[in-house]
Length: 85
Image (cartoon, rainbow, N blue to C red; front, side):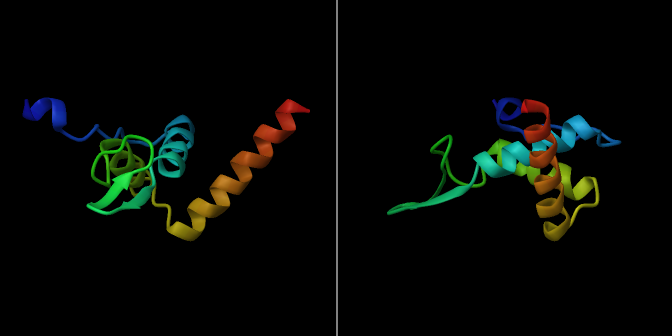
């Protein structure tokens, strides 16, 4: 059972695809306050959930700080908007 609950592995080196997926995981799997504590907004399990931990660990492994992540996210969003036009 512990293998099922273990964290997802972080591949090194971190690829651009990994960064994009990690950024999505960090945006979607955010804490939400409930009377009995913080839960993942997406999964309704205690925060941080497995995907939130994986996303944050992947970003840290890539060497991104919080400020750099915000810049990466904005750049990724503008690229995606450019492809839809």
